[in-house]
Length: 332
Image 1 (cartoon, helix red, strand yellow):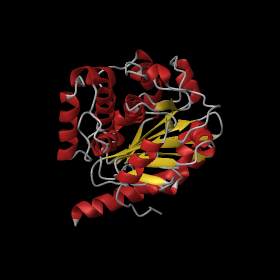
Image 2 (spheres, one colour; image 1 turned 90 degrees about the vertical axis):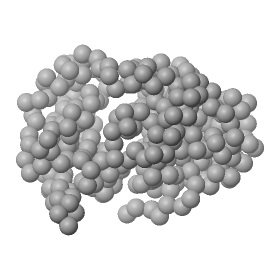
Image 3 (cartoon, one colour; image 1 turned 135 degrees about the vertical axis):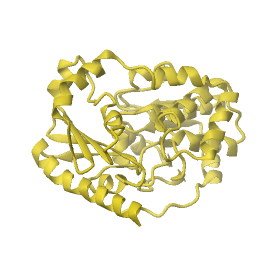
Image 4 (cartoon, one colour; image 1 turned 45 degrees about the horizontal axis):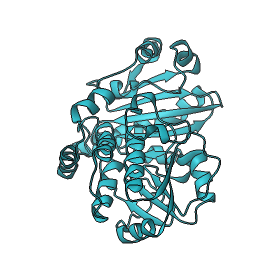
């Protein structure tokens, strides 16, 4: 069940920050470019305001995002501290913030929830949620405008990284004229668009290609749904240390005959992580939410307990329903 969104409470959030001296910023586990860009953009801006700020996410940032200023300050295993305010960014629910979020909530009297996912559960004390925004980074830009805090080059670079990665270079259906306006402002503040695109979208380690080579034999296409399976053995054989599909789901959704793409990533703890993508008119966020996950209409995910066979048996009928509903909408 989706929660009813309200207008962002900019005034209450700004006042909470004004009164706070110590602030914790956290984001979701297995962070992508928007998560880390938003985390660092906001953390650096708050430090510029004179606040004492800790930024944390379980496991830290991915290697390709460590070019961002302040990435070395991210705490990857939060187990100490006390803060006046905790700010959760780019996380649709409390569980997605992992151990860092759980520890922060237990040691902060007030939680600000900043996000752009329509599946957000509205946790926390103050909400800064804009479901129409293409990235959480956009919400931070809006908030900094509300607080009349100027954009420095390090902050702008981190936030434009969030915008670029979550829109795949302005190619998703969530991009609006406001998205492009914000990107322009960030570039004017010193964010290097060409470098960000080169580091985040146009570069990939060979290990990801090696992983794809091992996974491609599992690819199946039927009824507009394309799927693949990634196992821990595949990841280990490719020399990778993190649970990833290497961006494979983004390749699969580009296939002309496909409406929905799913990658099943088998975990060592008896669960299967789903990465879901869809073409416009096909909404995968609802089924992701039903499975305990969430995300965007065209990009969502969830983690489901069970064997790969059991999870596929549960998920594939749901995906077929998504395709049928999307085709019906297109035909009407």
